[in-house]
Amino acid sequence: MTGARKSRSERGQLDLFRALPGDFAPRDAQDLMAYPFFSLAKSKRVAPIDFAAGSVSIRVEAVPDHGMATIWDADILIWAASQIVEARDAGLRTSRLMAATPYEILTYVGRGTSSRDYRRLKAALDRLQSTTISTSIRQPAEGRRHRFSWINEWQERSDRDGCPDGIELIVPDWFYQAVLDNALILTIDRAYFNLTGGLDRWLYRLVRKHGGRQRDGWRFDFHHLHQKSGALSPFKRFAFELRDIIRRQPLPGYTLFLETEVGGRKLLAFEPAPGCGRPVNALVLSGTRTIVPSGTGGACYQEPKQGVTHGNEIGNPALNLESNKESNFEERARDVENLILATAKGLRLAGKTKADVTPSVPRTASDRVVAASDGPDTPRLTLELPGGRE
Image (cartoon, rainbow, N blue to C red; front, side, top):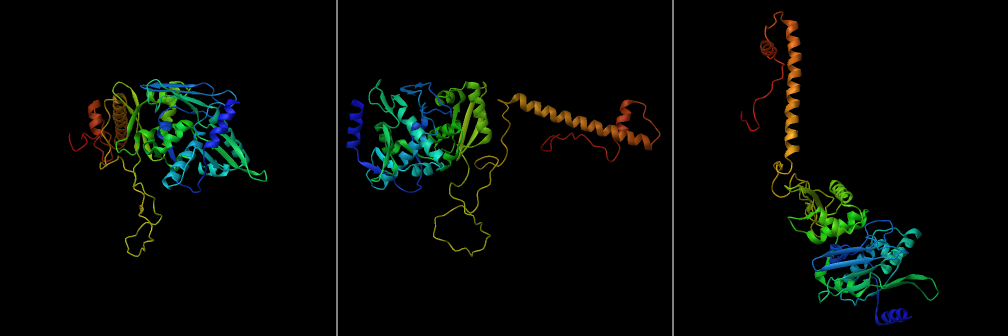
């Protein structure tokens, strides 16, 4: 009864904020991007997340009936943050009590609008409401914790005739205060909603938060990433999936690299993908001056070609001999061996042809080699080193 009275009191003290129409830029809270707050698995997770680093501690707990809120459920929080920031920037009054139709939420985060999608939305709201978080982040005194759920409560609305009229939800004050702080909010790429893998989504948010648009990118140790993900998979499986992400390059706006230190430690490196950062114009100029400007903002006339390396360099980088000694020298040895075998085969074939034409036979093995190499079509093993040196 006490909880019910508290909920009614909270609802009565809050103004209702009606969701704004429009396809504006998605925003995300940096705290949610940097730390393990969500399950990365599509299957139900009940095991809690415990994370501690320096002064930051996080514990996320779930109930067996619904399971822990997933990183796909977090799309609803991205929608809520985007609505609050857009309204505030437009000079409108915002509130933690928000109302919208399922259609508005689903279409904003790139989901379908079938009855199955509506049921999944309600299940996501249940997980967000039942998942509890205890954290020291943004607490004024050391040792203090803030405990909350991602959604304090939610309910379905109906009009005067009893027909469905959307949903209402109340976001927690911890989340709401972070959204109102410009320093704690980042704009994310809309293509994020197209990422289907939980690890892909988590890694994009981490990269966007830590790397931003820095020219030189950022680097993370594989073990540190495993800890920050909160994933239940063992480290070997986690590292395998990271390598697969590097191979697929799914993160919008960023290029991933695998680096190996001298001691063998694996690092995930990333940097902003090359490009002008502006929309590409479908029309490529031919050099004439017959184009009439439409009055729109400038755009790229042609997507820049992918270079071998970023920056002004156009050549291949030097071999990484320190971290790849074995593979580099083995590759060189294989190349030399193949060249010797091909030359020997050519010499044997030329020797047979020479023997058919000339009845004289050299007396020694060295004489046979010299005689065979006199043919005009005989392949020769070059003695010149790269760059014209001998």
